[in-house]
Amino acid sequence: MAAETKVSETKIWRTTVLTLFPEMFPGPLGVSLAGRALASGLWALEARDIRNSATDRHRSVDDTPAGGGPGMVLRADVLAAAIDAADGASASSKDRPRLLMSPRGRPLTQSRVEQLAAGPGPLIVCGRFEGIDQRVIEARGLEEVSIGDYVLSGGEIAAMAVIDACVRLLPGVMGKPASGAEESFSEGLLEYPQFTRPQEFEGRPIPEILLSGDHAKIAAWRRAEAEALTRAWRPDLWAARQVRPGPRQNRPKNTTEG
Ligand code: SAH
Image 1 (cartoon, protein in one colour):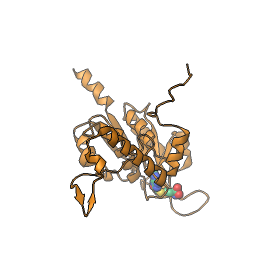
Image 2 (cartoon, rainbow, N blue to C red; image 1 turned 90 degrees about the vertical axis):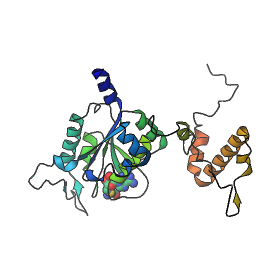
Image 3 (cartoon, helix red, strand yellow; image 1 turned 30 degrees about the horizontal axis):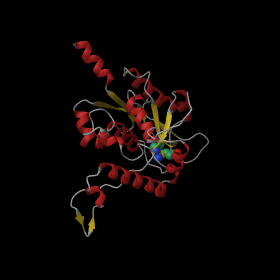
């Protein structure tokens, strides 16, 4: 029995965040769906203070950029020590991804979120100041991930976005498992518009077809709306979809393959 408990403990999705502001966590991740799941042990979060790995008298973590320029840069030796200490404290350190939140990184996508949610849970490094020394990115194999083409003052809010997107996909976190399957990006499409009561709002009725009870017609209407929205608002997603059909799209019936 004790051994069984241990296995399930190491198997829960466990994320470690390296930050200069551990007091920011769990923050918004401590409320609502993610918060309830955290409290009930469906996932775990460890926020570690990078400053604990500083070695000098002043516990300094940053220094001026080599070659000059504005701001400060997080030191490679301090951050490497923080990563190594986190790895030493974690059972899943060998196979977990190591992310660095970074505006120049690869933009986060729902499919990367799905992969991260299916794994053991990532180590996430939050930058501050002008960023971090390039050598630690290479030496510790950090995967740079961006949450969009704009610059935040630190990686913490970006890390929270990554964690929130993953946690809602974990088994048992969302009320109905199906509510994740049909939403935006799940098939390379934006989500169709949603309606609920009242039946009429400021003179605007709910589209009649949604009240018809005809599930096939409703599905077709939603599909058409999702496609029209994607084409109009996200031509990039639409184009990618035309090139590489989503997994759920039917293959042509008379394929000669195999
Ligand atoms: N000088 C850097 C910006 C540093 S912003 C540059 O021009 O690229 C400080 C920190 O905030 C970064 O190290 C990163 O961890 C975080 N950050 C800022 N914008 C981000 C974004 N769009 N996505 C992910 N992390 C971001």
